[in-house]
Image 1 (cartoon, rainbow, N blue to C red):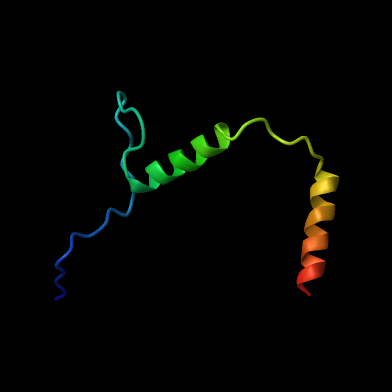
Image 2: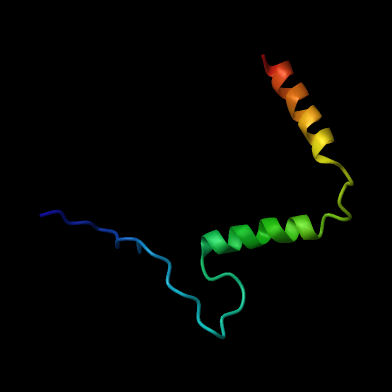
Length: 64
């Protein structure tokens, strides 16, 4: 028999209440902060997938 001093974490997230607003736990709070940081960071940079691929390949090549 195993005992623990700390309560076991829930294995499954519980559904949100219909009237719930905002983050309900620490993980949701951190995610909310990251999303809001992105939203409030100003206009996005216009770029293409080709440009992103080129930059990624250059970075990978420089790491070798």
